[in-house]
Length: 592
Image 1 (cartoon, rainbow, N blue to C red):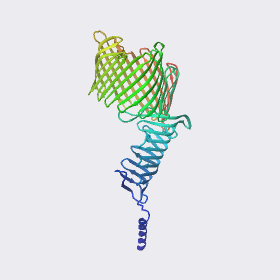
Image 2: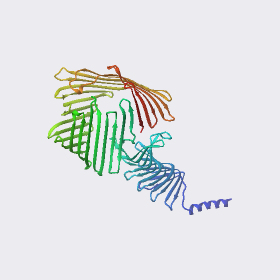
Image 3: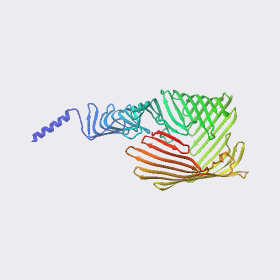
């Protein structure tokens, strides 16, 4: 018995010593990849010294200061700093980016990752793809091949997008190539390329200025069909632009088109065409359009200039036909707190020279703005504004000349007495249509929200502004008040009620001498009611809404609309009836 035990032990030792070196253990710590310490944990770890590889199998966790991989199996070629991993799924965190897939290849020296059958979040979008290339040192640094995107959360999405590829340029844009919009199994539209613009806000966070290309459409029986479509495009890295079309009703339309040719990193040519048609408050139809051809050069971080030729024509109303063709040089200098802009131009129609110089200074709570316009060396417009904040106070002094309302000058102080209460006082000389007066203004603004319970709250606001005109008996006081009672009550598990009942009024006591002091009289009662039936299994809402506005001054309804809305997790449509105008309406929108 002792002899048998000895033989078995000898055989085990022989296998360990003379075969390819394999070591089974729970975790391994090694120092590789610069100063980072790598930690490998798994159910089983095998070290192959001959191939200079570490094989980890079962609940693998590979991590260092910049990298974390969770997988079923991982092979680490530590001499070449190459990692291959397999799993369903593989969870990867690398350079602050989170990705998932079922097969991974990572080259640590080149800082490249290739992840197959993968998904990734890019800002507010979640993409899936047959392959994701994460190229840390290149631009774009994320490429999703055979991409798929939807906002639907149900197992079989109502709609989705496909793309041959999605390219992400950090803090700049997302470019989709060969975009397709699908409704169920049916493709609705094809686009060669589409660009989602990304900007960085003042807090350093990314902001999306447009989503994927879904137009907003609808129909109103009184005003007709309306649509809005935004299409940023890219023909190549050098040729790109944006087309934006809005048709709001039978009379209102706007179309804006801009195309850019990027000559180099800091130089570009651009062409802009704009056309619009709208009806103003006096039911007068206005039409105008302009064309602009220019060159832009960003000299360095401080200096930027545009040189362009612009033709503008206002064709309606006919009594105000206006036409100008100008050539301009627009130069801007910017530093941390200060910027200055100057425009030098010539109008070929009126044969007039014009120059503009503007400055802006912003340092914490101190802001200073100036603007001066010249026509044939004659000062035509002036603007100077100084604002200073201090604790609960804000001071402002402004001087405007050459505008419809002139301030010659005017100063004001605003005091935030409470989070809900603001007090203000202002004094200065005002001129409109060659009529001028000194005046003094006193203002009070109070707004609060009173929470009665989790389901009930009250909104209240009150604005009072009193104006006294010097060397005159004229004075005027403007009152604006609003009171809203809001209720949001869940009656049953799948049934809830939202109700808002409110009253608002505008009242003027006295006679104003200036247009800026006028206030339109109003006494309005509003009621908004919404019944919501929710089916959680399908993530589906049926909503019935009644929107009413009644004018006590006119003793008639300004608005009487009843609407039925069917809303899923990713899109909604609505049918409404406007009783006042005897009109049927329809709206459809995607929820991105």
